[in-house]
Image (cartoon, rainbow, N blue to C red; front, side, top):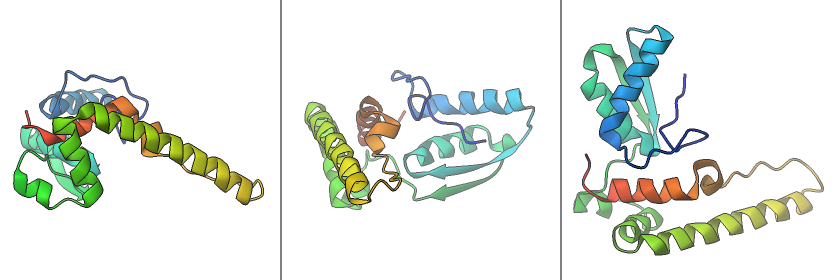
Length: 153
């Protein structure tokens, strides 16, 4: 089972909910599946959510593994360790979220144009380019960047 956080993938956005709300959702999913315990595998920005579940539901968590983990960026040392693009996104999320949204819209348009160009060059061969802004949602990306850039709940 690979659940999406609220607002990710095709799930319903829940901007008022943060990382601390995820363990209750995870417990409800385990209950619905009739599972007493499960392992957790997280990727990238899902890592803080997975850690929250493992901490809150330790008795129901067999193991936790993280792929390309991302930590909340409310500590200056965490931000210094980021790559240039992500460091810029975190700073914009804190100080100019409107500018981050504009940049992500431009990125999304550029990715869509690159997809069309690749299809033309490829002679009609299938091309699978899914910009993160299309799969994740522009509003959700901005909300996640802001959530990770400010104090965690």
